[in-house]
Length: 209
Image (cartoon, rainbow, N blue to C red):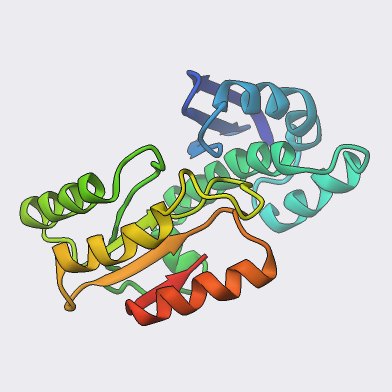
């Protein structure tokens, strides 16, 4: 069953992908978010030419083919665009076979705990802690992730002392019965990462990214 058409529906942040095969069946997918309109252009320019006419059942083969055909353009945008077609094809196949995608992939359903996540560094430790406490009260989260350092900060914090202050502030506000996760986003060198890691360990941080 060949892929007949690939369409995208997007704004700056989100892009959905509709794949239609020669029998008129459709599957829906999504490219990676953020600058999704740019990713959609990459999809039409550098992914769709290799996908149109391809066997829709051969998802693995297509995912291998695209980076080979576009070997001079490696990088995240090609991957972000490819996943839009790939997820649409899995949806197409699931609809066709009457099975959820997890079953097609050989998985099994299980509970998956969610954590509250902060994408911000411009927030004070006290305000971040208060925001997390409100989220726990409202939604019942039992795990929380927040940012430390300055993104690609080269060992510089967002402002002096923020990393050292936010750890005890969040722990005091939430108590010892919640899991804390921390993301540094390439803020620290190996030596500084170890130093910060010791501080995180002392406050019971469960995950250090």
